[in-house]
Image (tube, rainbow, N blue to C red):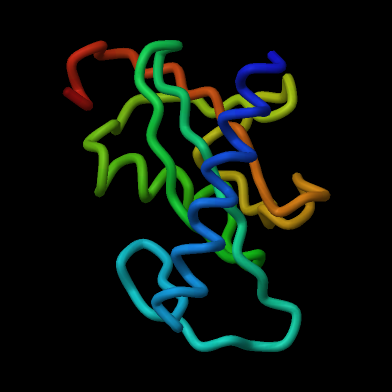
Length: 118
């Protein structure tokens, strides 16, 4: 578990530094304006304990938004998300900001079809 935290922190630092260099913020490939109390949340997806992908969400995004990204960007349409030993179904509308204290989330993804994301 320590290795996963190290990977998550490293990726979070890379995104933070990249955003500062580029002078803008993006999420899911779409620019968003900086609003009050909206922060970036760096999410590391560990897919079937094999593949590691990452993405940037905002604090107002929800679990449902994570499922949307998995489906649209990574072509994973039948999966379950585990965060902090809790499983979240697709219809959850919990805000990601409530699931983290340090602006990063490590999400373990279990996909039914092992070849969906290759």
